[in-house]
Image (cartoon, rainbow over all chains, first blue to last red; front, top):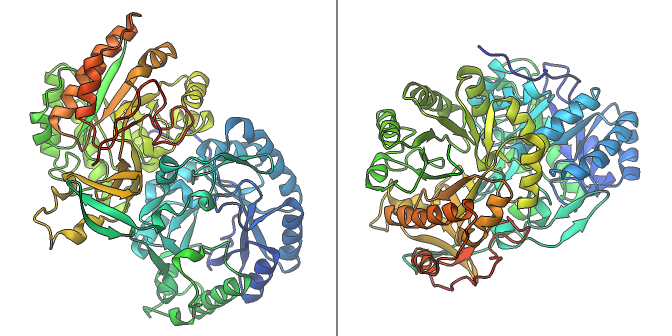
Length: 321
Length: 309
């Protein structure tokens, strides 16, 4: 068998030490980070201004980010930084410089989307843990091994993969597996959508050293996608309207099935929603914390459910990512 | 390879047999969206073997594509398709999923890999990584411009394959909502998604193929072929996975003749070609993102024909 061409992972991700999954919360502002930590998050992920796939809403500038890192460290917790829109070649040095500065300030991990930039960060910032973003579209064991080869510390899988799929990944891959167990599943798979930019590629929006491309989820972020998939469409068959409909989408909340996912070996329980209000982040994290704590760390669960989905905030909707 | 390659996509043996491929140099076999697409080559490996032989028997190159977004349960079938491709003498495999690329690299090291449009090649750095995994050609992500494509090809030394005509992929799904209509419509899976189905909202239109969404308009780069040739591009695709054999043939004849004229340096417009293109267009023409504009726009001398779908 031919060897993979690239070196394997370094660094320590959110999910270590092994044996007990960590809870990773979204935070669009410092208050959300505080509430997430108070509710039991082990780490928060925040967007870097100008550079995050979650879009411009809820991003941190470098000052806010430093405060967040200080807060996390004071509590013995960690911060992941989402810098996961795909930078243009001329933007890569600027982003790399920012990441290097932030790593010096104690940043623990960065979430990236482009395989080329991921490798560059691995080589130039070897102490920084790297998570392959959910926008990378990883779905299977071989995907996980690819990102492991590339030097990623963790890879994010969507919350609609089944526990047995995760167990199969864990059986072969040593890379940490983050699963977005609380998320909105849109019709088009994450990382595989350019419907919005086909319909409207908006003027570029300049960020902090970056140039977001409106309409492009990959290069502008979710917030710039005009909510194409949440609008009503006419379905025409042979030119005649057969239906008026929305694209299918659904809220995934795997809190009731958390034990099965933890049994399967999930390293990090990730919650979607950097734009959520701080109190809602706290409530969601508290619910998942209780479920994770109920599952005996390191012991197999013989109960199908141990989380209370009904305890989740009712305001959580498709629009509330 | 001659001065250029013109290729297309065919999903099953029936479509392959019905198609006149005389204007093509190569064919991708298989449907990347759905396992239960009618007799998908990627599921019917005897058909795939026969299809490869049929294509190569016509003196064309036979490529085997692979699923755009496979989960673990699909990987064994992908493995079998790769084995069939290798055993039957396929000239390359197309991969959209980086895990599948890793499988090809490790288990079929002699097999050239073409990177598909869902693999998200946006930058030179990304292409460089995939080249190290055995990629010899890439379809850039459809969102990037010709200037950006040129920077990748020159920086990495890997040729790009450009969709010059047809419906551009816009997304892939895990769920086919067309199945919701089976009980009320006479059309059923696995041919339901081959019907004339469009999603419309005001002036916007997209083609629905169940687990995939394609551009409503046809990408058309006919009048820009001399510029593509001058820029050094020489691999071109007519994306016709969901089109008729007539579309596949008539559009290819136009492009083959035009590419020959452009490659010979004697570019002239063929006015009659535009009538044929209009006949085969449901909602108009666009040229995707090649000029850094909204994908549905058309940049060029030709105004797009406004035709109700």
